[in-house]
Image 1: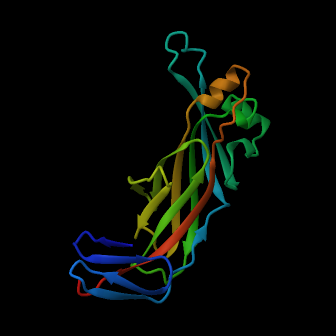
Image 2: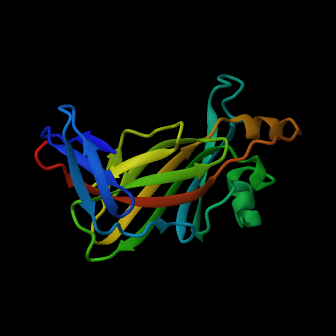
Image 3: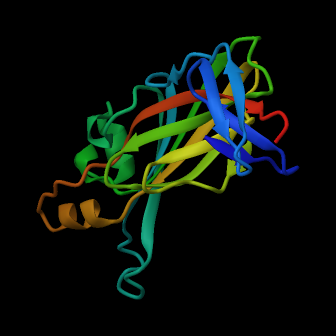
Length: 212
């Protein structure tokens, strides 16, 4: 992949080591040598999840049926997966206002911390790959910085150079429709699946194309 930097310099990105040939518009070519690329990082465990359940509000729905009652339950040190598989207690289900985790609709706010090696340099960037159910990635933050450009077709986020050596923090916000809760309130069932199921960080090395 070749792109221009903010300063109009030509940059080459490589996700694997090797020698790359960059063909220029003037017919010339340049060689970019990439000796090493850091290993990818899989974040499958150790997540903090704040799950905000949206449901009917008996106190106001006769006046305004568009309003929802909202309640939040915190889950600590959980693995990624479907919301329906979360280890909720009877008290947590009561707080969420549902009989089963398979009935929850609303917003999930995920947070995890991970450590990168000291040799993670400024020329190393990364793509964040997200897998989830029938919901939508509404927001991604890395080390407190909000990333506005989320590709909803590939569920990929370019983290650029936001990552750093040492501890890093990633936050992901998922939002669902109210379909599952509405169906559950009417005594039915649905095949919709909600939840963040995989998060993978794939590094790349960014090199200036000399003489471009």
